[in-house]
Image (cartoon, rainbow, N blue to C red):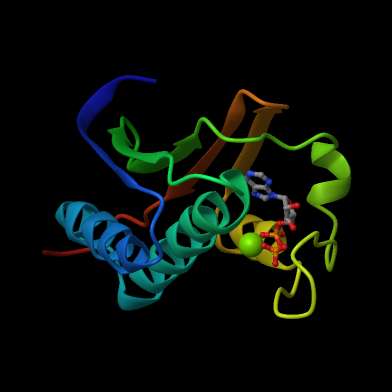
Length: 145
Ligand SMILES: Nc1ncnc2c1ncn2[C@@H]1O[C@H](COP(=O)(O)OP(=O)(O)O)[C@@H](O)[C@H]1O
Ligand SMILES: [Mg+2]
């Protein structure tokens, strides 16, 4: 699909940057004239993916997180979150609802939430190389504007 516009940002995997990533994604997506509901979905999905990179990818160092958003032909927003961290040994299992390696304070619902708020969700991961989460969402075309 043809790419019409994009942003790419990189930041250290610190929890303070999760809010920035969420706001940056929403600000970029605004040019597609999303509804408040669509915007909320985008913010939530980005928040879950970026939080995972911050919380799970780098157990013993502050690595880097890359966020890329693309607007594709046909009013599709694609969101990619990438880390170069420890990777996920079994992606299928990690994506099951309530599966977590994070202990008590994690719900294990991150991937389930991403999948339900976005139209497409793909996770690619290699142990010790990192994880790339790619999500896509079709933004409804407004009748008048
Ligand atoms: N970027 C990542 N790097 C390494 N492991 C990850 C990453 N994202 C997710 N995981 C693994 O997948 C599991 C499930 O993720 P998720 O559904 O978001 O639930 P939670 O974050 O609450 O554990 C995590 O507990 C972790 O083991
Ligand atoms: Mg999570």
